[in-house]
Image (tube, rainbow, N blue to C red; front, top):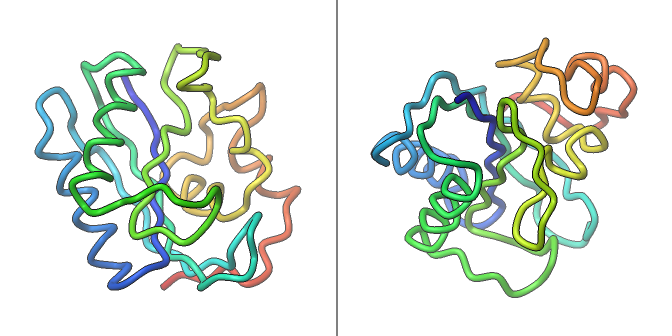
Length: 156
């Protein structure tokens, strides 16, 4: 199945961290990286008193079930030094499962599609680069993005 991931970092060598995350995904049995967006410099969202982010999106083909893909993302985050201290706070790496083809999940560990995907320009700008016609929540990614303020978001 196809799945779409958001990647982000705002600590250290952010570009290298995003690259390492994609390399980790590609090295995972049952996961093939199909496309990767450019990196985008984006203002912080939610908690705004922190450094700006570098964000991107990745399309993968996977044999993993949605929770298995989530576990893979969490494992890669851990291997790259992610420590979860503060919600929406600074992070060395973040890998979010945004959408998983044909799957709707809503449990304590995972909500698919991601509950905030259509509200966040920093997610939709890179996602629209690689999958503008992807439908999430009944709406094309490109159409959802057209409704949002993209102030401050720039290709890195």
